[in-house]
Length: 160
Image 1 (cartoon, helix red, strand yellow):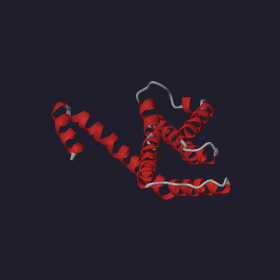
Image 2 (cartoon, rainbow, N blue to C red):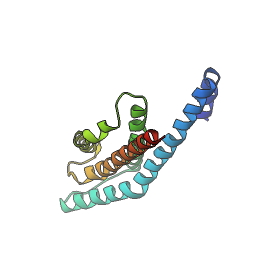
Image 3 (spheres, rainbow, N blue to C red):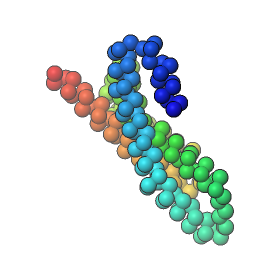
Image 4 (cartoon, rainbow, N blue to C red):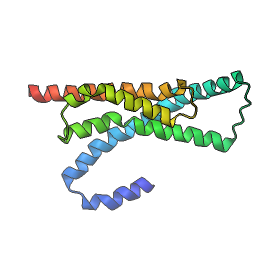
């Protein structure tokens, strides 16, 4: 309901081409966000919780997780993955705007991987390093996917 009201408020101020551009951006963005949430919910969260419980048991710790903490943990991961799955779209938008060329992504891949790994380390709930890769791995894959999409669009543009 909130999104419908927001669109109804903004739409009269937009021109027809701006409406088309916003549609062409919002549909992939929503799809990527949902894909990130589904991926996190089905693959990442169960493995992270299992790992954390086993890690705690092996250290002789008793893990208490109440409902509020569990829901907060799950929602934070859903939001983090939903937003991180926007990476290819952000890369494409930056390249399409002309701020940088498509070679930038390939030349700076090492720096991107380091930044992604640091991001994964910052948002993980423990210091083991294993859960960090549950976050960094998919994001590195998304970086490569974004790079491939950008390069494919560049080749199409050069061929036409």
